[in-house]
Structures are given as structure tokens and as C-alpha cells.
Image (cartoon, rainbow, N blue to C red; front, top):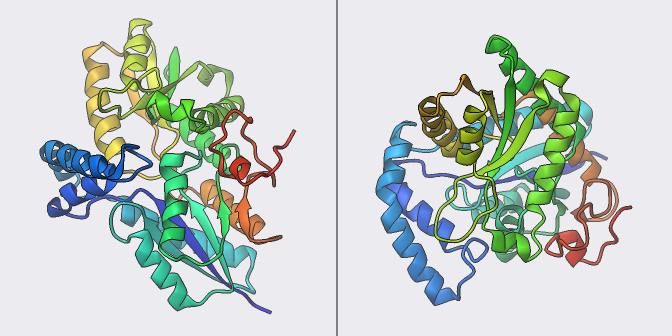
Length: 349
């Protein structure tokens, strides 16, 4: 019998117009997964931070037409994923729903839309390949708080083979398009986190390293010189490093051509289109880089979409609940904020 399957795509979200920038930032910084201060203090901090950062953020979003392209980018991914799922499982009815954490369409809106669809199965699919309490963890909690029905929850996929293949292909393609530069260093840039979050048992940095190791292993020798770095650092806390700025400066000092790829972002948005394409490109030029070339985000790359489809179909087998990559937690025990470890699952290996 054909099943009605709802696939919910989690992502950060972004303001759709200039007037949305400040409330978007306030929603972001009032999330206890982002700022762990007590409620009243967190609310005050969220108001202050959003007020201070609104002007600069509006200027950056203006470069993209006034708002973020992340919803339209996610809609393309949803359309491609729906088509691939129907190709793989033609007897079932699949429908993708977009659930953004900090701006429309909010997770609460997705919960209502899914209920109206009345599916037989629900798969929660984060567009965050590497798990963090600040991203996937926050989204899963929001789904439950909004009254979302019981679902099959994909927690992460840092080494999913099609995801890795897509990254490797895009890196090689950009190298070819850039004229096959010699002495290249591939910089894998991921969104940073305060060190305190990692110290509390968040496995994000470890999973980023697993992704990079898997991608690097797929690349030819002339593209294996690489470094992992972290961008978007804000505030006074110490963040995981090295920063992308530091990695660019080092590569320039060593006479390298820079090939920079966003390893934890799967969609083009402000961190890629402004931070990577403009701010870091300007830094590289000032530092005398031999060349600076940015690999595009995965978007609706066929291999990436195939990987998402396979993750979805695997999640539909067995019982509902958490669905780790190989059927068991992959994170070492020291990363106790892993939702699978928290749920008492036994780690693989």
C-alpha cells in the first residue's frame, strides 16, 4: 500500500526583506542553544545584540537584494529531493516541507502544514550534515515544542558517501575552472562555535573533521594540501579555530593559491555570498594571495540530492525515532550531547 511520507527539511532561515533583519537576529540570539544565559538575561542580550548588529547586517543583505536567498535555495533542494524520492520509490507519495529555525517558514508553520498533509510517516532531515546542539539539536527541540508528531529523525551524515562525492566533485571542478593552479591549498571553512559548546560535549567539530578527512581522501594528490578553518566568529568568547582569516593569512604567507570550500553550509546565503565571496576575497587580495577561488555550496548537486534521498529511505526502515548514520551513534562517548548517546544508544565500533 502506498504511503504518504512527509520530509521536513530543517535549516537556519534568513530575513526575506530589510524589515525582517532585526527580528530574525533577535530570534537567533534568544535561542538558549545559542546563548545559554538564564531566560530574562538572554532576552535582554538578544535585544541588545540584534539592535547593534542590524545596521551592518542590513548592508550585507542589501548586497543580495535585501534578503537571504536561503528559502529559495532550499525550495530548489526540496523539489530535486521530491523528484529523486519518487524515482527511487514510485509507489509512495513524498512531499517536502521547509522548516526554518529563525524566520519564515518557521518550524511551527511546518508542523501545521505537515498535520494538514496527514502523512503516514514523517522524516526530519536537517540540512546540517554535521550535528550540533545549536543547529539540528535546536531544530529537533523546536519541532517537539511546537507539537510535531512522532517522526524518524536523521541526526547527522558527516560521511555519507554521496555527500562526500558531491564535495569532491565541486572542488575538482573549481580547480579546473580556475586554470589548474599549482601549489594549491584547499581551505575547508565551517561555521565556528564557542569552545565552551564543544567542551560541554557537542561533537560538531569532530564531525567536521570526519567530513574533511573523507573528502580529502577522494581528491587527487595535487588537491590534498588542506586546512580546516572556522568562520563567522562574533562576541568575546574564545571560538574554535583556526579562524578562516588566520588560515587565509597563513596560506598567503606560504605562497599558496587558495581554493576555499564551505564544508558545513549546503546552501548559498550571507556567510557564503558576502563573508566568503567578498570579505575573505578582499583579505586574500590584501595578503597577496597567488589566487583565491571559492567552491560553490552543494545546493541541488545531483550527488548531494541522491545522498539525501538515500538517507530518507533508510530512515523509513525500522522503528520511528532517532536515525544515526550507520544505525548507531558515531560520536565518541566524550561527546555526550550527541542525541543518540543521550537516548542511550550504543555507539558503533
